[in-house]
Length: 153
Ligand code: SF4
Image (cartoon, rainbow, N blue to C red; front, top):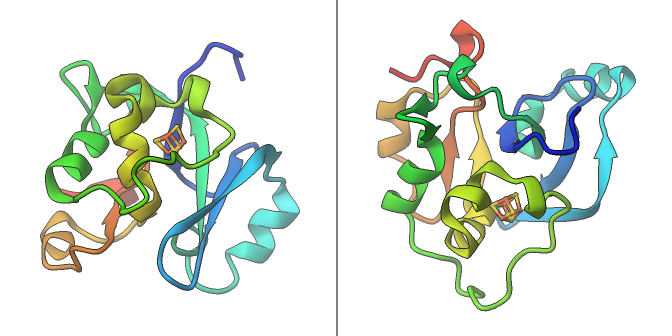
């Protein structure tokens, strides 16, 4: 990947993706401080149980207009999340993730994105209407929308 490419912080589990973090028992994300690249073996094992995107967060290069979440020159996911969620209580201390310098959400919203990011669980299947009925303590958002599985309309 290009060193200057913006990174989507809510992408699919696929070879070459970065393992951004794991979903902790309290439903929040625990971030890796290192850029861990997912390989084919990881994907094969991770996809045998529940959807890996519900247990981990992954990051891949932002594909902009090739993604269904892209609208008016920006990522619509973080705009939606910020409109629906309150920042985490520990808002003064940003998560120590490994992608901040290139993160699409951070590029759009700065620290405000990082304050809600730990509450986001990627979901490749949940339609928008179901998400609106979900808990206010966390949110499931669609991953990058490159395939019909990501259609949230
Ligand atoms: S929004 Fe902030 S915490 Fe989340 S992945 Fe991007 S830079 Fe890291």
